[in-house]
Image (tube, helix red, strand yellow):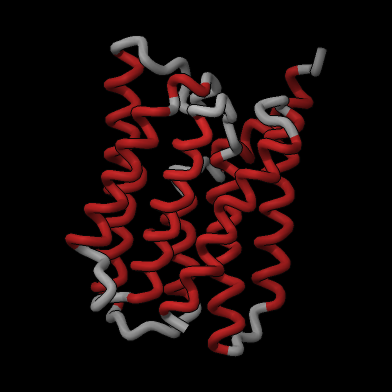
Length: 206
């Protein structure tokens, strides 16, 4: 049995890079590159909107489901309990790109969150095959996919940033594997499900 102290770092990594938080990290890292045309107040407003739609509202929905006994924990280990949270997430992301971050306002962020919808739909569909892919791997791969696309398109010298992001991605996947939350195939499929939509959709804003 794994000692509690050995599970400390994987738990911290799993919570800090929970799929709910990664979209906000991604948008913040995009803004940090200073390749957009938003003013500082606009950036703050977008970050607030993204946090509301991808963190706060999903957490409130989770608390509602938990009070009803529909989910066990914020990690949602039971595949059967993931359906409603994923449907809710897809709905919120759809509202985000149709009401706020439209293609006219930000093609990059629009396609990033559209990719998030596609990835979430893949995760939802695989539940019917009784496959619980890693949403941690999916979200980290989406973040990495966007940053790789930005680096290539704008010829950005962000090798250190990409290296750090790859290390973080490896740490997150290792943590999920260490905690036995997922198998290697579940991590691999989750990673591919997050990465490929971002790389494909980048063609629409390149």
